[in-house]
Amino acid sequence: MEEFDIESILQSTRMAISELLQQAHLKPDSILVLGMSTSEIQGKRIGKYSNIEIGRAVVKQILDILNPLHIHLAVQGCEHLNRALVVERSVAEAHNFEIVNVFPQIHAGGAGQIAAFENLNDPVEVEHIVADAGIDIGDTSIGMHVKFVQVPVRTSVKEIGRAHVTFLRSRPKYIGGARAKYEWDPFDKHHC
Image (cartoon, rainbow, N blue to C red):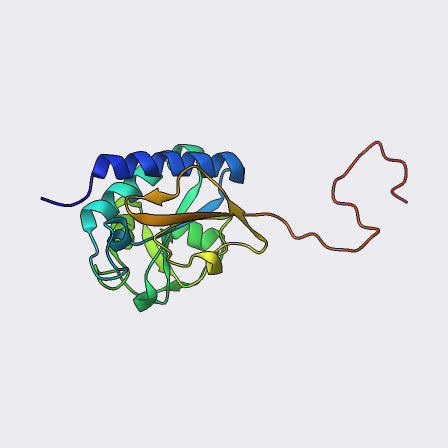
């Protein structure tokens, strides 16, 4: 018998994504990156005990939430694929992401990437993306794929299974100095 409760993992995943979406204010066609260690979810060392059942369940759960909102999922692979990401071909083409030629395996890419290939319509791997927000299940280091400026998001979900979980959203950069203004007021007569 496995040492994990899949329903508890899915419940935590639903709550985590819901709270992230509430704070990230993503619009249709936004991209959310998922980094996930199914080993860490089981309470084991990252990269050592990949579990396809957990990967399939979590990726499908997230897609079931994002798809009706028209938010795109990008699933990050492990360092053996240089943290390449699985996305829909249409997303890669729309954003001019460079498609690379590799297919994930359980120990090169991981269970989440395999699940993404199984659940997306026309999946491809890309080397780099610029996502609007992200969820990192098991300390997989997703920050390189989220837009600058990144803002940590705090939720009530601290773990999924036994994996530490963190969240990021992005915001536009503030530029300028003391005279800069960061919110537009159409009634302010001092624009000039």
